[in-house]
Image (cartoon, rainbow over all chains, first blue to last red; front, side):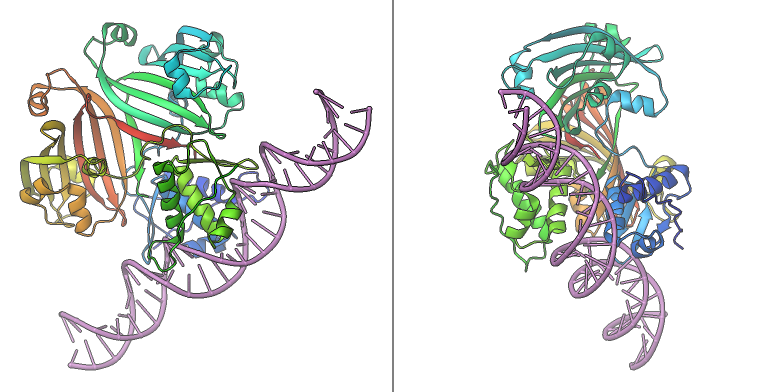
Length: 246
Length: 246
DNA sequence: GTCAATAGTTTGTCTTGACATATTTACGTC
DNA sequence: GACGTAAATATGTCAAGACAAACTATTGAC
């Protein structure tokens, strides 16, 4: 028996109709109103009830499938993914994630410089002549417990960064406020053991396991905006993600 | 100056038209025929030239954006992502990845058992009564160099697994051959240090950094098919991925 | 009870068409 | 050359419609 979905659709909203459906179904899944394993009504029925076209409904369903929340099969129907749903993989930052889960991160800027930058980062960021680099290192803690040590390079023609603002707000938040529209990031996750410098800052023993992450983020005009090297205490942080079949 | 794309479209092919476009553009990017940073012709033009509808062309473009290969902006156009494109995140296995990059992995099955399974894995897999579990541990090497130690549990009603077949082919390959249609996987990546057992098998020192990965994969009817714990030598393996803004 | 054929169900693919929005370019005026 | 406005460009959103393919359920024959 498929469940009837009660999704409010507001045609005067600036939020696209397909996205209102996405948010409605996501909300119902997260709240438990749509139970894992349950079958949804078919897409034609649902579109009709919400006065939406089938392609609009299909676009919403596709996004939910891509987010790992639904599975669909021709002739069978649509089902809420049974296993506990984790946050789907999307372009967000550590600070975004911590705030979203109600934690209170704090940031200490350990170093900050602004200049032409070194060749390696200029190459990674693919900077044109005349564009400089902000380079800074931060320690992020939750409560009083250190969690991550982050070194970043940001091109200097998209925002004005300072030590003050970096200790108060997340880097991505600052860049978005300055008008950067991030579209994608290349990321590499690995492992390392803490050296004495890292151990001292992160509050663990030298030799302890660290999760490492290197990332380069791109905006909607194709520019590489920032690149970074992060290390996280392995006892406090893992990367969780949903992989979806193409 | 936008480049003209030469993509062969075969309407008699079982491959969907939108997917032929995806493969054509992907191939051109990978071969260098479409250079990083270059602008593509607009979607209406391109659709018209290939005798495709605009929604079909847009579906192909959307997939390429999601794969991290293109960026698009209203009023501006479509551009090949400038930074070196890595493999987009999709549901594949270690064996798949190694084979794709031309490496020759080999597998040694260290243990294999078949039975009702333990409560923890039964819960993770959400098995109905009467369905049992294959449980096995494998060591995967490239050349003669150990790379990964993998412990998996697979529900026993989707395929017949054996020690022989597991040493010859990848687990995902066997399951797909048996008719499993994987749709998504939940995955958690972290770090640990090698204990003596792991170090002995992986050919590294105890205390060396290991990348850890836990995963549960789901098929197209919503069933949890397999769950696994893997550890990789950190000096030989990282997880690379493209994150895309939703 | 089993099996094959048929009908029903639902998603997947593709097309035509239109309007909205964000950005860039062109043009006229100063 | 700078500035403001309009036009052009290109993607983003939405709709209606049709056919195809994979799956499940039903029916009739044996």
